[in-house]
Length: 278
Image (cartoon, rainbow, N blue to C red):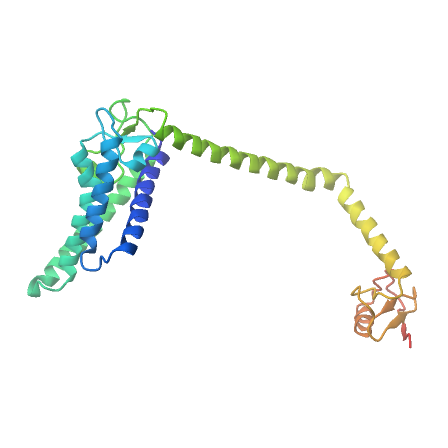
C-alpha cells in the first residue's frame, strides 16, 4: 500500500469538504451554528460517498476511492474517525475556553492542555512509524498495519488496497503517472541543455570563440560609426574624439574611459587622450 496514496486520500477529502463548505457558507448565514452546519455537510458528503462507492469487506471515502485506498472497518467506525471526532473535539475546545465553569476553569484548562500535548506526542510517534512502514497490505499481506493517526489506531482503522474497478483508482493512477512522465521529460531537456551549454560547447571553445567574434564585430562597428558613442551605444552628447582610434564618445563616457584607462572601441589602455569634436 502506497503511503503517498494514503496521505493523498486525506488531502482529497479535506479539499472536497472545503469546496462544499465555501459554497455553502457563501449562500447561507452559518455564524450561529457553524460547527453544526459543518457536521451536517460533512455527513451528507460522507453518506453519498460510502453509499455509491461500495467495497466488499471494507469502507472508503470519496478521496480514498480516488487514490485507490480502502479502510478495513465498518462505515460507522469510519464516520466516527473522519467526521464525528473532529466535531466533538471542537465542542470540547469551546466548552473549555468559554469561561463558564468558574473555579473549575483552570483545572479543565490544564487537563485540556495535557490531553492535547499527549495526543500530539502520540501523533508524531505514529507518523514516524507510518513513514517507517514498508507499504504492506496490513494483515492481508502478512505485514504490520500502518495507521494514519492515533485515532485510527484506537479504532483499529487501517488502510488496504481498493479493488480496482477501472474507474476511480485508475483515474488517480493515470493522473499520477502523467505528472511523473511530464517531470521526467522536463528533467531530460534540462540535462540536455546542461550537456550542450556546459560540457560540449565549453570544452571545444565554441562559446569563447563566439564571444570573441562578437566583441570584434562590435568594435569594428563602433570604429566605423561616428554617430554612436563607443561606450553607451547612443548618439554622443557633447561628443569627444579619442586620439587612439578616432572613435566618438559622450563627454561623460570619455571621462569614464580616461579614468579607467580603457578604450571601448579599440581596446587601447596607454596614453589615452580625447579632444572635443566641436
